[in-house]
Amino acid sequence: MFGFIIAIIIGGVAGYIAERIMKADHGLVVNVALGVAGAFLLNLLLAIFFGIGGGNILWQLLAGIIGACLLIWGYREFKARR
Image 1 (cartoon, helix red, strand yellow):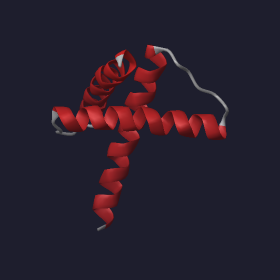
Image 2: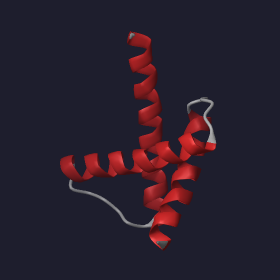
Image 3: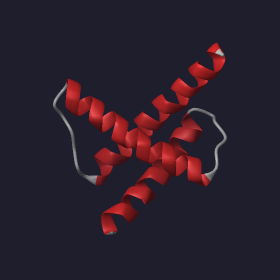
Image 4: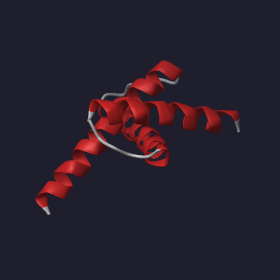
């Protein structure tokens, strides 16, 4: 249960930072979702292609920020092509 709460907090912070970096405007729930999904996605890709990963909070925060930025960018590209 504690790990789930920490994941939500880190995801929220990562999503908020990514929102500021990408100059987007989302709510709290979207920030948490982007941060958690971004961390999961980036960790998965790094593990598959490079065999690296980390479990500490700083690594997860960094992965969440980069992953959320990639998700925001991908959404903008998808929306621009429609």
